[in-house]
Image 1 (cartoon, one colour):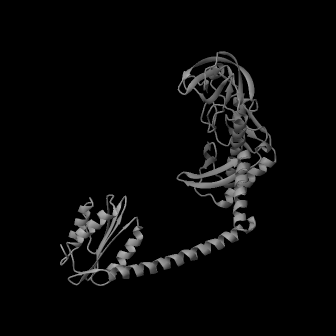
Image 2: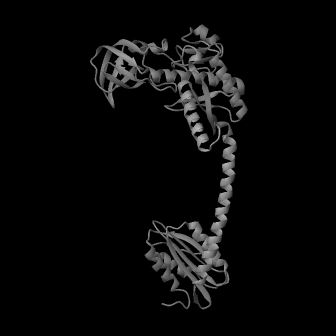
Image 3: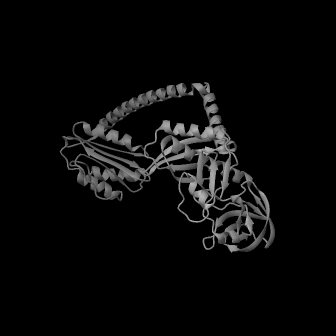
Length: 413
């Protein structure tokens, strides 16, 4: 995140946040204001409002009576543009930065520098991407092989730097001094470069806002990882966000422990016991359901209509799970001399049409007739055909199955 400071931008807008991240109330001169998409674009002679850049979001707050909705750098001359929700008269104006948002960004961004350097030292994994969102923060590491042990080691080292309360310094080195600095990543821009030093632990080119000492970060907590094609994404939180995340998770932990009548330390054992009980219950339920389907298949066979030595079973339901109907079709067609015509009515009609292996009967005309009546396409299959048609009510499905039944040799017309 190297920062080039164009001379034109310094004349257009003095960026005072470079030298002071803690000022939250300031006075300046509003040099211009004009209608813009979403509000009014205002330019100050000098500003402490940070514009979106380098992965860090913009500040918000107020300019006079107007709310500051967005802050950005104009590409044409790199002036800092403040998007306001209402017009403000040019001239002297007071700026008020939303401190909670600013300080949160300072904690997250400084914590990112520390964590990035920790991964370099512990796993030789350079940071190739950084994102500071409204809820989560992440860095992308250029390493495809990063173990849990290395991640934990880097997190521990980062928090040691935090608790050591190292000083944080941001400045624009002279060219000769810049060349002598061992930056974590060399910037690819020309012109004055701003450098942020965290004690003797990290040196990075960066234009963001940072805390004055690492103790202000409070805590760096790694939340999880995601494998990427180009490496690994590390999701983490710092400071107030990390404490809020801890409080939320602790409350959930306590609530679950109370519901399971155990202590938080016993949750692992209690959850494992519940998991085993659930697996056993699922097995018992599945076995019970299999017995129910066996009995239902026997009942359907007992009511089957005989045609030329073939037992024909027709049945239709509303909104029945397709897996249950399929289980019935498989049971029915595994018996000798059976043709099964089954359907499920609903928003998407489901059909299961099949015959036993010894039932020498061409099922294709039946399938095509049922589909035609329900507005479906052509169907096929030698023994068991599963398909779908458009929406239909139960009566329509029963009529279609009856039309297919009529095509079976010996069936009543």
